[in-house]
Length: 242
Image 1 (spheres, rainbow, N blue to C red):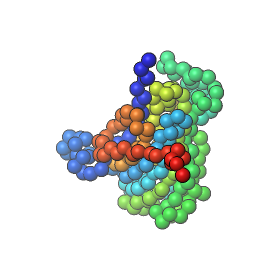
Image 2 (cartoon, one colour):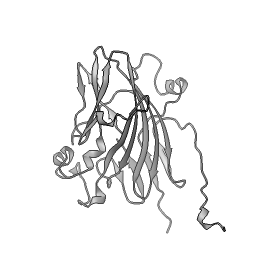
Image 3 (cartoon, rainbow, N blue to C red):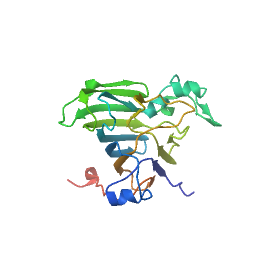
Image 4 (cartoon, rainbow, N blue to C red):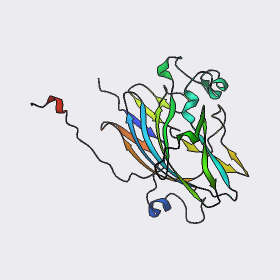
């Protein structure tokens, strides 16, 4: 029997130059890019887990001074049966789709493991997570047009596929809403609501550079431009004669 083609679906945007970015839209004015996000991610296909580092350069495009930046941790909506999303979807039943039980292997999460500032200093104490949202308390007020840089390491565990995210055993890994995502300062306040069963995602426009490492037999589907593809050969040194 022929094995099923394994597929990785990664939702992201790859914009590495102004020439590439211009091809993504019609000529003329466009929405201001609030941030530049560079992610290096590695998929453990057997464990359905992504280990990643992210450098975020976020600019205050508002006309007010900010003291914090909230974040979405969307995958945490799949971490337990009592999250807001799970309750609103009747324990995992939504639009004709249902979860496959409450075993630990059916849940998913995103866990931030370290946060450093532009100088490399550990500022994890300023990162406060609460379920599927988090808040980063700025060390100094961020004035309009000023920029802050954060280096964030995180792990994203995919749930058994349900409601547009997750894995289906060895068939595919659908990696969606998988990284810490800044909220939006809109009409004088932060918009950073929890993951609800019947609301859509709301984020600022930004430029993304994403480096993805997967097994060589995986087909990767993603938005954006493929800039470069490399194959690495690994040698099992333990099998070599001494």
